[in-house]
Image (cartoon, rainbow, N blue to C red; front, side, top):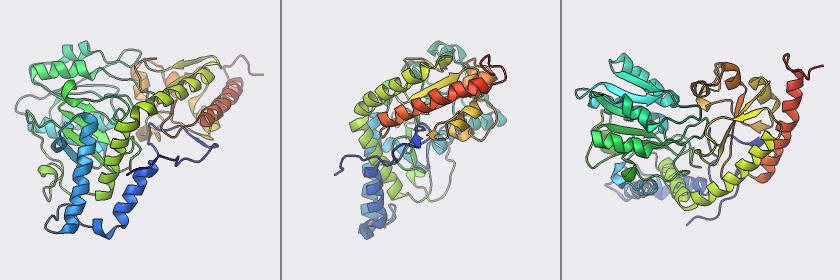
Length: 401
């Protein structure tokens, strides 16, 4: 039985506004994981079901499988454990494309996908597959019609993320899924940013493969899952060979404590996600009102079709790196966490039509379950103080002395 959550994040300052990169682990999840690690009764290998220790560990794994499946309206046997959404994306894309290569070698995706999708697609191109990369509109929306027009007789796979990790924009995967199902084309969705924040019904959405991770849903890093449609069944070529765990699709000893943590995190999301979303939406709007009052700022991405916690803002007449440095008491991002060390402007924002300078002057603020009004107000104060100061220092600024 779980108790109410208490914040694992310290009071301001500094303020943590980088939930899209990773969420803090919910203390209830951490407590369960510690129990798994410290209890002698749960030390067994989940595959060693010939004795009670292994059976008890296996019971936790299967309970978590049911918890994750329930959030998606999926059958438990459709959940395959992985190390995270990156591995799930690789298994889905490489596994499905290679398995179905005899049927066709054309894939449809978008330029704004996560690198964990784009890089496997590049590998498939080197293996002789052809990929059509769709460009979204200025608001970050990939219109279903764009997908329909890109389909060919040899198209075997469409991959489209549910929620963009930089802008928070929500794609219409239901319309795409229906078209793919009608044509017998496999549809993969990267749902790392949407699980627990947007209602997901894989049956209604026509999804064949869906990538999930725990650490975006207040669970631990290092564990994720791939939803794999079982009816009608589809095939994958595994990436990891070994002991044949997870139906031969993902060999390796299962990490009971991480899987149990992911299961509880998904159960809590199913139970508390609506309330979380409503509260976080209010905080996000409070933050946006405070930031937009400065003037010369623009919201990146669709103003309404986005999840509650993400606010991506372009600051005019300012250099983004200097702004992020000046806001060192705020944990925010200039782009995706996986690309944070790159000096290149965000490829996602450039695909939306922003110039290099506009993309460089953009920051992503992201809020979540443990965010507070005090943190938001602190962030507003920091931004309202630093943006005018930096604009005065900018060489092109008319306010520079």
